[in-house]
Length: 88
Image (cartoon, rainbow, N blue to C red; front, side, top):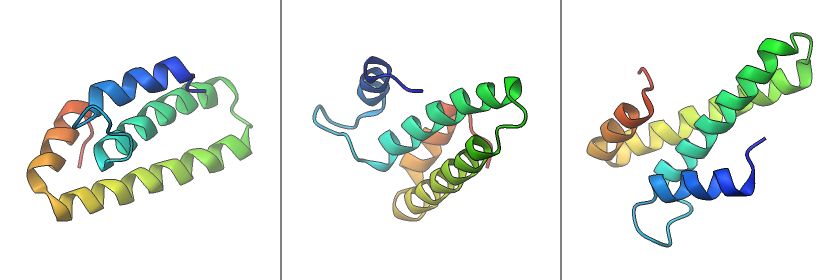
């Protein structure tokens, strides 16, 4: 689970401006952190089907945010993918 302090730190490092909390970059970064944490949880708890379903939903949500950003601003998309180390 992403704690409030971790989430605040993630938002600060991905924000475009000081009050930014909802840009695609911030949303994708938060989703990526949650996906990483849930993936490590699922490695330990193999039969947790409900969490696996939530993980798949988060991956799909991240993919749609990335697709939106790719269409709207290719430069910001490329910078975000490089920063997060995502393959596309």
